[in-house]
Amino acid sequence: MTATRVCSLSELSPASAKKVVVDGVPVAVVMDSAGAVHALGDTCTHGEISLSEGFVEDDAIECWAHGSKFALDTGKPRNFPAYEPVPVYAATVDGDDVLVDVSQNIAGSASIS
Ligand code: FES
Image 1: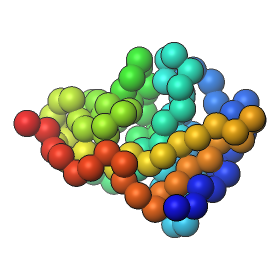
Image 2: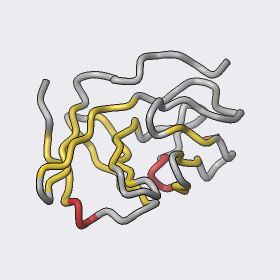
Image 3: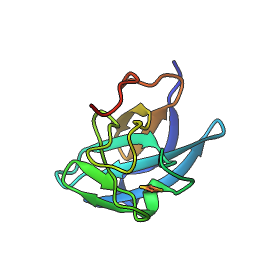
Image 4: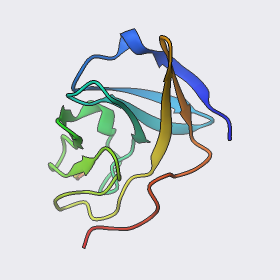
């Protein structure tokens, strides 16, 4: 398990997302509306769209293309057309450093039901 520094905490603001690439894996680093930091796979499961270009609202990120909202804690879509979850990675904050570990999907692989 190796966490990689991806950005400074000061580069993020509430309800925003930033795309980073960790070991070749595109990741959306998201600060939710409450200020907590999350890391999700950046590619929407419905199409080749970068989720970090979408909208963060409360505890979800919305794909700008067709409106599926993915929960930041589970990666599960809350509405169609996407029905497969995106991976969720461990994100930690150490001082002003944001670290992400892409070696493991911590959300499992359940899909919408
Ligand atoms: S590409 Fe994301 S919802 Fe369609």
